Amino acid sequence: MSKENDRTVWSSSQGDVRQKSHQSVSTKSLPATQQIVYLHRESKGRGGKGVSLVKNLVLPEKELKALAKKLKQACGSGGTVKAGVIEIQGEHREKIAEVLNKLGYKTKIAGG
Image (cartoon, rainbow, N blue to C red):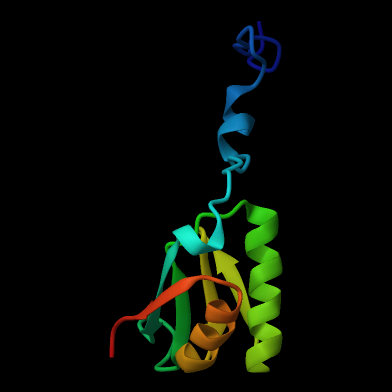
């Protein structure tokens, strides 16, 4: 018997469970008035260049990306969404706080 023909195959009644664990979990959003958003500044691991982080948002992935797009446009800067945190390139915490306050979020500026 060759090794090519003697492979162990395993499956479960739910199919390939590994792929399901990597899919995004849909979260329900809270109203903007019930959320407190924290704005941080970080430069660690970015070659000394600072980014503004928007943390503690309870929004589904789609809405989080839409909000990130609004913030990037308001700041005139690039950015991304990583692990539920919006990263905007540069020091824009004041501008971001202004935009979020207009949308009804409560904001707190944290960090140096």
